[in-house]
Length: 306
Image (cartoon, rainbow, N blue to C red):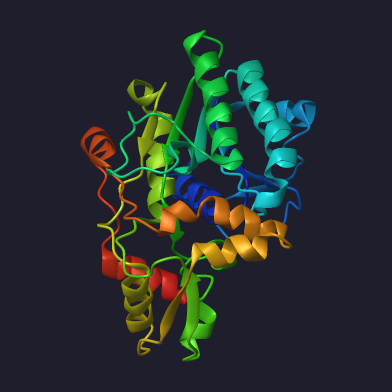
């Protein structure tokens, strides 16, 4: 089998994964619906509907690793988009024998009052977390049955270039850079874990390449948790800008707006992430892979540059 890599999803994680592999001299194809070139040198681009299992299987036929870096951004579409997409990716990996490396978040744990570890129960209380837990359970069951080799990495809310409106800090950054006051989710003074998309990519590539890492989830090494307000101020400082006034949007207000706005209703369902400390224990991945998170000043600089 060749060492070709197929990366599905041309968002910030997918682009970083493709760039890391290309920089290491590995042949890599970055697949997205548009097939539009996204910048990494040495990367081939492919227009592909990854929910079409036959088309995806053909694209992955000679791949040693199939990376799931897809990230449907609209919460209201997850129940429609994710099941066929996840089933297609898993089936293609089983058909081709490629290692199946999955990017995910922390939704499956649901509300917790302790730092999140990989051995915590997956006790999501909203349908999005239940869905993501079910997708992982299906992949893990296939791995344990010997039909495929799978591994998953889980990061917290993203920072870094290209995150844009999909990140809680980067969403308000354009206004903050212009000196405008901003409105952030829930409490803005509580510690909350943030993960650089580069560190997600580094961990995913390392996990895919390490057979001893397969068959489980790993938390992406991330910097110590800081409040939303502090993170925004640090990113602004990296851009040479002063802090701005920050207000928190109460989750109760989100629920009220959610009566008429589906996306606000979906946001309110995961509002627990912003009403208590949201902490990530990444000890296992640091020890296993020897990966440390990108230094915080560099994370802020990369985020400020967009």
